Amino acid sequence: MRVLVAIILMFISTAALADSTGERRPGERVPTATDVINGLYAFSRFQQGLLESTDLKGNAEVKNLAALRAEEAAKRDKALKDIQEAIGAEPRVGKTTASTGLAEPDNSDGPAYVRTFYAAQIPEYESTIGLLEHYLKAPDNAALAAFAHGQLPVLRSQMKDAERTMADK
Image (cartoon, rainbow, N blue to C red; front, side):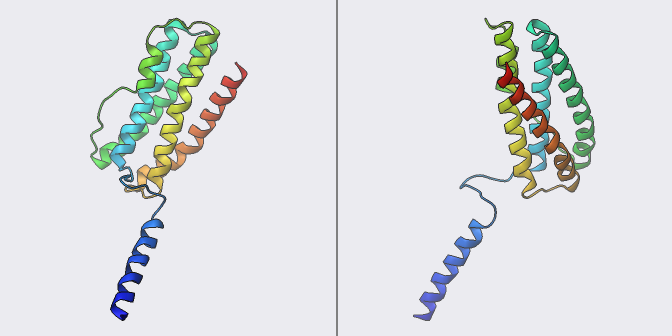
């Protein structure tokens, strides 16, 4: 009887430990440093795509903002490159679907394009912020963790700006 109770208590304590390891869902893994680097590079490509898109349709406001975000992305990539080389990570090259959709010509122009410009940014920011927050729950590289901590407030602020501007448009 005691053995049965001990086994039941062992299963209960194991289940409690699994629940306390962070709010992970079954099959969800903590991103690695390489995953975070890939995600940040993808976000930078998205911001470069915004700049290319504004060359075709944007007004001065969105062109200036896109140029600023692309410049910030280049600075972020430069700092990230040092971390990437120290880790020995090889990022995968790919395109984000949001940047592809925004850069393609469509019928939106003028105010409709400006709304689309800001609306396209929000899910990209949310995804990148979520990736960094998830990584920081169990980082595997101290330098990248420090970098992520520094980027989160900047990205959150930029996302809030995009949300406010979109609401005003």
